[in-house]
Amino acid sequence: MPFKKLLFPLTELVSGECGALLVDGEGEVVDMAGRMESYRLQVIGAHAVILYQHFQRLFLGLEGESLREMKIDSEGCQVLVVPVDEDYYLVFLHGRDLLNADRARSAAIRCALALKKELY
Image (cartoon, rainbow, N blue to C red; front, side):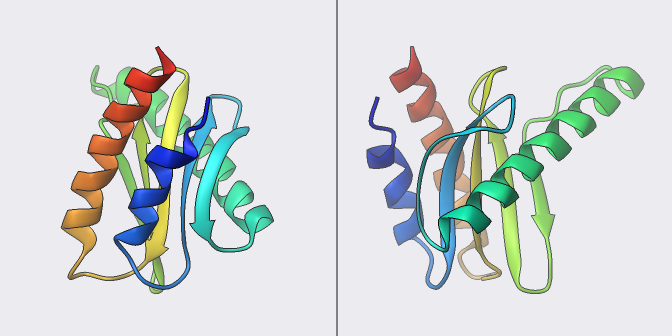
């Protein structure tokens, strides 16, 4: 299935290096789009999903609640992980642009919903 058509518009929302990835629960990239070296994107995407799953188990065990999303913020970039379902995740990596962060987050959530429809 060509998921790139859903991932690519996310990359158009931000300037500079960025990437949108559909990653499975094992950390394998199913499809991706972006303006960044692909190996770097794949490594960040896989590790972001592993961290999400770790915190998901932690929150379920301690709080009895599921995570809705996870954002990792550094000085130069943001990584947003949004579950598509229990087996797939959207990872959106972009430069730290505070003006577009809320718009990018909303678009990522919409993209995750569209990916779920495309998967099933």
